[in-house]
Length: 451
Image (tube, rainbow, N blue to C red; front, top):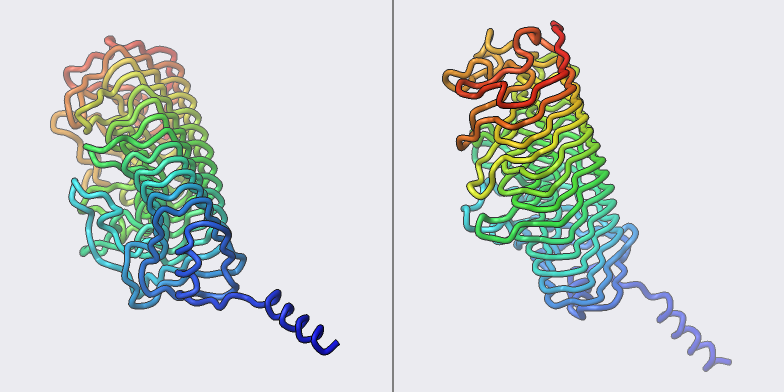
Protein backbone atom coordinates (compact mmCIF):
# COMPACT_ATOMS: atom_id res chain seq x y z
CA UNK A 1 0.00 0.00 0.00
CA UNK A 2 2.82 2.28 0.83
CA UNK A 3 4.48 1.68 -2.53
CA UNK A 4 1.15 2.09 -4.34
CA UNK A 5 0.52 5.37 -2.55
CA UNK A 6 3.90 6.70 -3.58
CA UNK A 7 3.21 5.75 -7.18
CA UNK A 8 -0.18 7.38 -7.03
CA UNK A 9 1.37 10.50 -5.58
CA UNK A 10 3.92 10.60 -8.36
CA UNK A 11 1.18 10.06 -10.92
CA UNK A 12 -0.83 12.85 -9.38
CA UNK A 13 2.04 15.26 -9.57
CA UNK A 14 2.58 14.43 -13.24
CA UNK A 15 -1.11 14.66 -14.09
CA UNK A 16 -1.71 17.94 -12.28
CA UNK A 17 1.49 19.78 -13.09
CA UNK A 18 1.16 22.98 -15.13
CA UNK A 19 3.78 24.74 -17.25
CA UNK A 20 5.45 27.70 -15.65
CA UNK A 21 4.53 30.84 -17.65
CA UNK A 22 8.01 31.95 -18.67
CA UNK A 23 9.56 33.12 -21.90
CA UNK A 24 12.01 30.20 -21.80
CA UNK A 25 9.15 27.69 -21.55
CA UNK A 26 7.34 29.30 -24.52
CA UNK A 27 10.48 29.37 -26.66
CA UNK A 28 11.13 25.69 -25.95
CA UNK A 29 7.52 24.76 -26.72
CA UNK A 30 7.48 26.65 -30.02
CA UNK A 31 10.87 25.26 -31.02
CA UNK A 32 9.25 21.85 -31.47
CA UNK A 33 7.47 23.34 -34.49
CA UNK A 34 4.27 21.28 -34.30
CA UNK A 35 1.70 19.96 -31.89
CA UNK A 36 -0.58 21.71 -29.42
CA UNK A 37 0.55 24.42 -27.01
CA UNK A 38 -1.86 25.66 -24.35
CA UNK A 39 -0.68 28.90 -22.82
CA UNK A 40 -0.86 28.95 -19.04
CA UNK A 41 -3.02 31.49 -17.25
CA UNK A 42 -1.20 34.71 -16.58
CA UNK A 43 1.30 36.86 -18.44
CA UNK A 44 4.49 35.81 -20.17
CA UNK A 45 6.88 38.73 -20.59
CA UNK A 46 8.86 38.51 -23.83
CA UNK A 47 12.22 40.25 -24.10
CA UNK A 48 12.94 39.64 -27.80
CA UNK A 49 11.27 38.25 -30.91
CA UNK A 50 10.38 34.57 -30.78
CA UNK A 51 11.01 33.49 -34.36
CA UNK A 52 9.52 30.17 -35.46
CA UNK A 53 10.64 28.67 -38.77
CA UNK A 54 9.08 25.86 -40.82
CA UNK A 55 6.36 25.07 -38.28
CA UNK A 56 3.57 22.76 -39.40
CA UNK A 57 0.32 21.61 -37.85
CA UNK A 58 0.90 23.81 -34.83
CA UNK A 59 -1.81 25.17 -32.52
CA UNK A 60 -1.18 27.82 -29.87
CA UNK A 61 -4.13 28.70 -27.68
CA UNK A 62 -4.93 29.73 -24.18
CA UNK A 63 -7.84 31.07 -22.19
CA UNK A 64 -6.47 33.89 -20.08
CA UNK A 65 -2.93 33.67 -21.41
CA UNK A 66 -1.19 36.98 -22.18
CA UNK A 67 1.98 37.63 -24.18
CA UNK A 68 3.45 40.94 -23.04
CA UNK A 69 6.36 42.87 -24.55
CA UNK A 70 9.02 43.71 -21.99
CA UNK A 71 9.99 47.39 -21.66
CA UNK A 72 13.28 46.71 -23.46
CA UNK A 73 11.79 44.40 -26.10
CA UNK A 74 13.77 44.05 -29.34
CA UNK A 75 12.39 42.50 -32.49
CA UNK A 76 10.02 42.72 -35.42
CA UNK A 77 7.15 41.06 -33.51
CA UNK A 78 6.48 39.22 -30.28
CA UNK A 79 5.84 36.07 -32.34
CA UNK A 80 6.93 35.58 -35.95
CA UNK A 81 6.31 32.61 -38.23
CA UNK A 82 8.12 32.04 -41.52
CA UNK A 83 7.57 29.24 -44.05
CA UNK A 84 4.88 27.76 -41.82
CA UNK A 85 1.93 25.58 -42.81
CA UNK A 86 -1.17 24.89 -40.80
CA UNK A 87 -0.57 27.25 -37.85
CA UNK A 88 -3.56 28.10 -35.64
CA UNK A 89 -3.35 30.91 -33.07
CA UNK A 90 -6.41 31.10 -30.83
CA UNK A 91 -7.87 32.73 -27.75
CA UNK A 92 -5.08 34.61 -26.05
CA UNK A 93 -4.03 38.23 -25.60
CA UNK A 94 -1.07 40.27 -26.81
CA UNK A 95 0.03 43.40 -24.92
CA UNK A 96 2.53 45.41 -26.98
CA UNK A 97 3.60 47.86 -24.25
CA UNK A 98 3.32 50.79 -26.66
CA UNK A 99 4.14 53.39 -24.02
CA UNK A 100 7.66 51.96 -23.76
CA UNK A 101 8.19 50.84 -27.35
CA UNK A 102 6.66 53.43 -29.67
CA UNK A 103 9.17 54.40 -32.37
CA UNK A 104 8.65 57.78 -34.03
CA UNK A 105 9.23 57.00 -37.71
CA UNK A 106 7.67 57.68 -41.08
CA UNK A 107 6.83 55.33 -43.95
CA UNK A 108 9.32 52.85 -45.42
CA UNK A 109 11.12 53.62 -48.70
CA UNK A 110 9.13 52.68 -51.79
CA UNK A 111 11.18 49.51 -52.33
CA UNK A 112 10.95 48.17 -48.75
CA UNK A 113 7.96 46.18 -47.43
CA UNK A 114 6.65 46.88 -43.94
CA UNK A 115 7.81 43.46 -42.72
CA UNK A 116 11.40 44.63 -43.18
CA UNK A 117 10.83 48.09 -41.78
CA UNK A 118 8.33 48.28 -38.91
CA UNK A 119 9.41 46.89 -35.51
CA UNK A 120 7.35 45.95 -32.44
CA UNK A 121 4.46 44.24 -34.20
CA UNK A 122 2.16 41.80 -32.46
CA UNK A 123 2.20 38.82 -34.85
CA UNK A 124 4.24 38.55 -38.06
CA UNK A 125 3.43 35.88 -40.65
CA UNK A 126 5.85 35.53 -43.60
CA UNK A 127 5.68 33.25 -46.64
CA UNK A 128 3.31 30.89 -44.88
CA UNK A 129 0.12 29.07 -45.81
CA UNK A 130 -3.10 27.95 -44.14
CA UNK A 131 -2.79 30.21 -41.11
CA UNK A 132 -5.68 30.90 -38.75
CA UNK A 133 -5.75 33.71 -36.18
CA UNK A 134 -8.96 33.61 -34.15
CA UNK A 135 -10.17 35.12 -30.91
CA UNK A 136 -6.89 36.93 -30.18
CA UNK A 137 -7.05 40.31 -28.39
CA UNK A 138 -4.35 42.90 -29.14
CA UNK A 139 -3.75 46.09 -27.16
CA UNK A 140 -1.12 48.80 -27.02
CA UNK A 141 0.75 47.49 -30.07
CA UNK A 142 3.40 49.94 -31.28
CA UNK A 143 3.59 48.46 -34.80
CA UNK A 144 0.87 46.44 -36.53
CA UNK A 145 -1.28 44.08 -34.52
CA UNK A 146 -1.04 41.51 -37.34
CA UNK A 147 1.35 41.81 -40.29
CA UNK A 148 1.02 39.16 -43.02
CA UNK A 149 3.67 39.11 -45.76
CA UNK A 150 3.55 37.08 -49.01
CA UNK A 151 1.32 34.34 -47.59
CA UNK A 152 -1.77 32.44 -48.70
CA UNK A 153 -4.78 30.89 -47.09
CA UNK A 154 -4.85 33.33 -44.15
CA UNK A 155 -7.98 33.44 -42.00
CA UNK A 156 -8.30 36.22 -39.40
CA UNK A 157 -11.52 36.35 -37.42
CA UNK A 158 -13.05 37.46 -34.14
CA UNK A 159 -9.98 39.42 -33.12
CA UNK A 160 -9.99 42.68 -31.19
CA UNK A 161 -7.40 45.42 -31.64
CA UNK A 162 -7.41 48.47 -29.38
CA UNK A 163 -5.23 51.48 -28.61
CA UNK A 164 -2.51 50.65 -31.13
CA UNK A 165 -0.21 52.33 -33.64
CA UNK A 166 2.66 54.80 -33.55
CA UNK A 167 3.36 58.28 -34.90
CA UNK A 168 5.86 59.98 -37.13
CA UNK A 169 8.23 62.79 -36.15
CA UNK A 170 5.45 65.35 -36.56
CA UNK A 171 3.19 63.46 -34.17
CA UNK A 172 0.87 62.19 -36.94
CA UNK A 173 -0.09 58.58 -37.54
CA UNK A 174 2.37 56.52 -39.59
CA UNK A 175 -0.21 53.94 -40.86
CA UNK A 176 0.46 51.43 -38.04
CA UNK A 177 -1.80 49.87 -35.45
CA UNK A 178 -4.18 47.65 -37.41
CA UNK A 179 -4.07 44.56 -39.63
CA UNK A 180 -1.87 44.63 -42.75
CA UNK A 181 -1.66 42.03 -45.53
CA UNK A 182 1.15 42.79 -47.95
CA UNK A 183 3.35 41.62 -50.80
CA UNK A 184 0.93 39.47 -52.78
CA UNK A 185 -0.95 37.78 -49.94
CA UNK A 186 -3.63 35.58 -51.52
CA UNK A 187 -6.79 33.79 -50.45
CA UNK A 188 -7.23 35.82 -47.28
CA UNK A 189 -10.14 36.72 -45.03
CA UNK A 190 -10.49 39.29 -42.24
CA UNK A 191 -13.92 39.07 -40.65
CA UNK A 192 -16.05 39.69 -37.56
CA UNK A 193 -13.34 41.66 -35.81
CA UNK A 194 -13.27 44.90 -33.85
CA UNK A 195 -10.69 47.67 -34.19
CA UNK A 196 -10.90 50.73 -31.94
CA UNK A 197 -8.62 53.69 -31.33
CA UNK A 198 -6.17 52.76 -34.08
CA UNK A 199 -3.78 55.54 -35.08
CA UNK A 200 -3.20 54.32 -38.64
CA UNK A 201 -5.26 52.11 -40.98
CA UNK A 202 -7.71 49.57 -39.64
CA UNK A 203 -7.50 46.72 -42.19
CA UNK A 204 -5.53 47.10 -45.39
CA UNK A 205 -3.66 45.41 -48.19
CA UNK A 206 -0.42 46.79 -49.62
CA UNK A 207 2.25 45.68 -52.07
CA UNK A 208 5.26 47.33 -53.62
CA UNK A 209 4.71 48.41 -57.21
CA UNK A 210 7.07 45.65 -58.38
CA UNK A 211 5.41 42.94 -56.25
CA UNK A 212 2.41 40.70 -57.00
CA UNK A 213 -0.99 42.12 -56.19
CA UNK A 214 -2.94 40.88 -53.17
CA UNK A 215 -6.09 38.80 -53.55
CA UNK A 216 -8.45 37.22 -53.88
CA UNK A 217 -9.65 38.13 -50.43
CA UNK A 218 -12.57 39.21 -48.25
CA UNK A 219 -12.85 41.91 -45.58
CA UNK A 220 -16.27 41.51 -44.00
CA UNK A 221 -18.44 42.31 -41.00
CA UNK A 222 -15.74 44.15 -39.07
CA UNK A 223 -16.41 47.07 -36.72
CA UNK A 224 -14.25 50.19 -36.60
CA UNK A 225 -14.25 53.07 -34.13
CA UNK A 226 -11.90 56.05 -33.97
CA UNK A 227 -9.48 55.26 -36.78
CA UNK A 228 -6.84 57.87 -37.57
CA UNK A 229 -6.36 57.03 -41.25
CA UNK A 230 -8.55 54.61 -43.29
CA UNK A 231 -10.96 52.09 -41.83
CA UNK A 232 -10.33 49.81 -44.82
CA UNK A 233 -7.80 50.25 -47.60
CA UNK A 234 -7.57 47.92 -50.58
CA UNK A 235 -4.13 48.48 -52.06
CA UNK A 236 -2.65 46.89 -55.20
CA UNK A 237 -5.12 44.03 -55.28
CA UNK A 238 -7.56 42.03 -57.36
CA UNK A 239 -10.81 40.26 -56.55
CA UNK A 240 -11.28 41.69 -53.08
CA UNK A 241 -14.75 41.87 -51.52
CA UNK A 242 -15.32 44.48 -48.81
CA UNK A 243 -18.77 44.01 -47.34
CA UNK A 244 -20.85 44.43 -44.21
CA UNK A 245 -18.31 46.55 -42.34
CA UNK A 246 -19.44 49.33 -40.01
CA UNK A 247 -17.56 52.22 -38.48
CA UNK A 248 -17.75 55.56 -36.77
CA UNK A 249 -15.34 58.43 -36.06
CA UNK A 250 -13.04 57.76 -38.99
CA UNK A 251 -10.32 60.42 -39.11
CA UNK A 252 -10.20 61.06 -35.38
CA UNK A 253 -8.51 62.31 -33.32
CA UNK A 254 -7.83 65.14 -35.74
CA UNK A 255 -4.45 65.89 -34.15
CA UNK A 256 -3.07 62.57 -35.47
CA UNK A 257 -4.31 62.84 -39.07
CA UNK A 258 -1.27 62.86 -41.39
CA UNK A 259 -2.11 66.14 -43.04
CA UNK A 260 1.49 66.80 -44.09
CA UNK A 261 1.43 63.53 -46.03
CA UNK A 262 -2.00 64.39 -47.51
CA UNK A 263 -3.33 61.16 -46.05
CA UNK A 264 -6.93 62.31 -45.70
CA UNK A 265 -8.95 59.65 -43.87
CA UNK A 266 -11.37 57.45 -45.82
CA UNK A 267 -14.03 54.91 -44.91
CA UNK A 268 -12.96 52.61 -47.76
CA UNK A 269 -9.82 53.65 -49.61
CA UNK A 270 -8.12 52.27 -52.72
CA UNK A 271 -4.50 52.47 -53.89
CA UNK A 272 -2.37 50.98 -56.64
CA UNK A 273 -4.05 48.89 -59.32
CA UNK A 274 -7.32 47.34 -58.08
CA UNK A 275 -9.80 45.52 -60.30
CA UNK A 276 -12.61 42.94 -60.20
CA UNK A 277 -13.41 44.03 -56.66
CA UNK A 278 -16.67 44.84 -54.86
CA UNK A 279 -17.39 47.27 -52.02
CA UNK A 280 -20.94 46.67 -50.80
CA UNK A 281 -23.27 47.09 -47.82
CA UNK A 282 -20.75 48.97 -45.68
CA UNK A 283 -21.93 51.70 -43.32
CA UNK A 284 -19.93 54.56 -41.75
CA UNK A 285 -20.83 57.63 -39.75
CA UNK A 286 -18.81 60.64 -38.65
CA UNK A 287 -16.23 60.63 -41.44
CA UNK A 288 -13.57 63.28 -41.10
CA UNK A 289 -12.55 62.70 -44.71
CA UNK A 290 -14.00 60.86 -47.71
CA UNK A 291 -16.55 58.06 -47.77
CA UNK A 292 -15.03 55.96 -50.60
CA UNK A 293 -11.88 56.72 -52.60
CA UNK A 294 -11.48 54.83 -55.88
CA UNK A 295 -7.88 55.73 -56.76
CA UNK A 296 -6.75 52.90 -59.03
CA UNK A 297 -10.13 51.11 -58.92
CA UNK A 298 -11.51 49.86 -62.23
CA UNK A 299 -13.84 47.17 -63.60
CA UNK A 300 -15.55 46.77 -60.23
CA UNK A 301 -18.64 47.60 -58.19
CA UNK A 302 -19.54 49.99 -55.36
CA UNK A 303 -22.99 49.01 -54.16
CA UNK A 304 -25.43 50.00 -51.38
CA UNK A 305 -22.93 51.64 -49.03
CA UNK A 306 -23.96 54.30 -46.52
CA UNK A 307 -21.93 57.24 -45.17
CA UNK A 308 -23.56 59.78 -42.86
CA UNK A 309 -22.27 62.96 -41.20
CA UNK A 310 -24.84 64.54 -38.90
CA UNK A 311 -22.70 66.83 -36.75
CA UNK A 312 -21.97 70.46 -37.69
CA UNK A 313 -19.49 70.77 -40.58
CA UNK A 314 -16.98 72.48 -38.28
CA UNK A 315 -16.50 69.14 -36.51
CA UNK A 316 -15.05 67.58 -39.69
CA UNK A 317 -12.02 69.76 -40.49
CA UNK A 318 -10.74 67.23 -43.05
CA UNK A 319 -14.19 66.50 -44.48
CA UNK A 320 -14.17 65.90 -48.22
CA UNK A 321 -16.10 64.30 -51.09
CA UNK A 322 -18.50 61.40 -50.90
CA UNK A 323 -17.13 59.07 -53.60
CA UNK A 324 -14.08 59.99 -55.71
CA UNK A 325 -12.42 58.37 -58.73
CA UNK A 326 -8.69 58.78 -59.36
CA UNK A 327 -6.00 57.24 -61.58
CA UNK A 328 -2.61 57.60 -59.89
CA UNK A 329 -1.39 54.12 -60.86
CA UNK A 330 -0.02 54.14 -64.45
CA UNK A 331 -1.14 50.57 -65.18
CA UNK A 332 -4.87 51.25 -65.01
CA UNK A 333 -7.59 53.41 -66.47
CA UNK A 334 -10.73 54.45 -64.62
CA UNK A 335 -13.19 52.30 -66.57
CA UNK A 336 -16.41 50.32 -66.09
CA UNK A 337 -17.21 51.00 -62.45
CA UNK A 338 -20.77 50.54 -61.24
CA UNK A 339 -21.72 52.94 -58.42
CA UNK A 340 -25.28 52.11 -57.49
CA UNK A 341 -27.75 52.42 -54.60
CA UNK A 342 -25.34 54.19 -52.25
CA UNK A 343 -26.44 56.78 -49.70
CA UNK A 344 -24.12 59.71 -48.98
CA UNK A 345 -25.55 62.10 -46.40
CA UNK A 346 -23.66 65.24 -45.41
CA UNK A 347 -20.41 65.30 -47.41
CA UNK A 348 -18.38 68.43 -46.85
CA UNK A 349 -17.87 68.92 -50.61
CA UNK A 350 -19.53 67.21 -53.59
CA UNK A 351 -21.26 63.86 -53.85
CA UNK A 352 -19.56 61.82 -56.62
CA UNK A 353 -16.50 62.77 -58.70
CA UNK A 354 -16.38 60.92 -62.04
CA UNK A 355 -13.53 60.53 -64.53
CA UNK A 356 -12.97 58.01 -67.32
CA UNK A 357 -15.43 55.95 -69.31
CA UNK A 358 -17.99 53.18 -69.21
CA UNK A 359 -19.26 53.84 -65.67
CA UNK A 360 -22.78 53.26 -64.38
CA UNK A 361 -23.84 55.78 -61.70
CA UNK A 362 -27.34 54.69 -60.78
CA UNK A 363 -29.97 55.26 -58.07
CA UNK A 364 -27.65 56.87 -55.55
CA UNK A 365 -29.07 59.13 -52.83
CA UNK A 366 -26.83 62.15 -52.28
CA UNK A 367 -28.20 64.23 -49.42
CA UNK A 368 -27.05 67.48 -47.82
CA UNK A 369 -24.27 67.87 -50.38
CA UNK A 370 -21.71 70.69 -50.04
CA UNK A 371 -22.22 71.48 -46.38
CA UNK A 372 -19.07 73.61 -46.57
CA UNK A 373 -20.85 75.96 -49.02
CA UNK A 374 -17.90 75.88 -51.38
CA UNK A 375 -16.56 78.17 -52.71
CA UNK A 376 -17.97 80.97 -50.57
CA UNK A 377 -15.66 80.39 -47.62
CA UNK A 378 -12.77 78.46 -49.16
CA UNK A 379 -10.21 79.05 -46.44
CA UNK A 380 -12.51 77.95 -43.65
CA UNK A 381 -13.17 74.46 -45.03
CA UNK A 382 -10.33 74.01 -47.53
CA UNK A 383 -12.46 74.39 -50.66
CA UNK A 384 -9.44 74.72 -52.93
CA UNK A 385 -10.50 73.51 -56.37
CA UNK A 386 -8.33 72.92 -59.44
CA UNK A 387 -7.53 76.06 -61.45
CA UNK A 388 -10.37 76.96 -63.76
CA UNK A 389 -12.77 74.40 -62.24
CA UNK A 390 -14.88 76.29 -59.69
CA UNK A 391 -17.66 73.66 -59.75
CA UNK A 392 -15.35 70.79 -58.78
CA UNK A 393 -16.11 70.78 -55.04
CA UNK A 394 -19.63 72.18 -55.04
CA UNK A 395 -21.51 69.84 -57.40
CA UNK A 396 -23.68 66.85 -56.64
CA UNK A 397 -22.05 64.82 -59.42
CA UNK A 398 -19.03 66.29 -61.17
CA UNK A 399 -17.71 65.00 -64.50
CA UNK A 400 -14.00 65.72 -64.43
CA UNK A 401 -11.38 65.93 -67.13
CA UNK A 402 -8.94 63.79 -65.14
CA UNK A 403 -7.19 63.43 -61.82
CA UNK A 404 -3.51 62.49 -61.60
CA UNK A 405 -3.65 61.84 -65.36
CA UNK A 406 -6.06 63.10 -68.05
CA UNK A 407 -9.21 60.96 -68.27
CA UNK A 408 -12.21 63.02 -69.42
CA UNK A 409 -15.59 61.67 -68.37
CA UNK A 410 -17.38 60.34 -71.41
CA UNK A 411 -19.59 57.41 -72.31
CA UNK A 412 -20.97 57.11 -68.77
CA UNK A 413 -24.56 56.45 -67.71
CA UNK A 414 -25.86 58.65 -64.87
CA UNK A 415 -29.47 57.82 -64.10
CA UNK A 416 -32.12 57.95 -61.35
CA UNK A 417 -29.94 59.63 -58.74
CA UNK A 418 -31.51 61.78 -56.00
CA UNK A 419 -29.39 64.81 -55.17
CA UNK A 420 -30.10 67.44 -52.53
CA UNK A 421 -28.00 70.10 -50.88
CA UNK A 422 -26.73 73.63 -51.04
CA UNK A 423 -27.46 75.24 -54.43
CA UNK A 424 -28.23 71.86 -55.99
CA UNK A 425 -30.77 73.56 -58.25
CA UNK A 426 -27.80 75.13 -60.08
CA UNK A 427 -24.98 72.69 -59.36
CA UNK A 428 -26.64 69.29 -59.36
CA UNK A 429 -24.63 67.73 -62.21
CA UNK A 430 -21.73 69.71 -63.68
CA UNK A 431 -18.78 69.15 -65.97
CA UNK A 432 -15.22 70.41 -66.09
CA UNK A 433 -14.10 72.67 -68.92
CA UNK A 434 -13.62 70.58 -72.04
CA UNK A 435 -15.97 67.82 -70.81
CA UNK A 436 -19.39 67.70 -72.43
CA UNK A 437 -22.43 66.57 -70.48
CA UNK A 438 -24.00 65.26 -73.67
CA UNK A 439 -21.07 62.89 -74.19
CA UNK A 440 -22.69 60.95 -71.36
CA UNK A 441 -26.19 59.56 -70.83
CA UNK A 442 -27.71 61.68 -68.05
CA UNK A 443 -31.39 61.13 -67.34
CA UNK A 444 -34.09 60.97 -64.65
CA UNK A 445 -31.95 62.51 -61.93
CA UNK A 446 -33.82 64.55 -59.28
CA UNK A 447 -32.27 67.67 -57.78
CA UNK A 448 -33.46 69.56 -54.71
CA UNK A 449 -32.18 72.55 -52.77
CA UNK A 450 -31.62 72.24 -49.03
CA UNK A 451 -29.80 74.68 -46.72
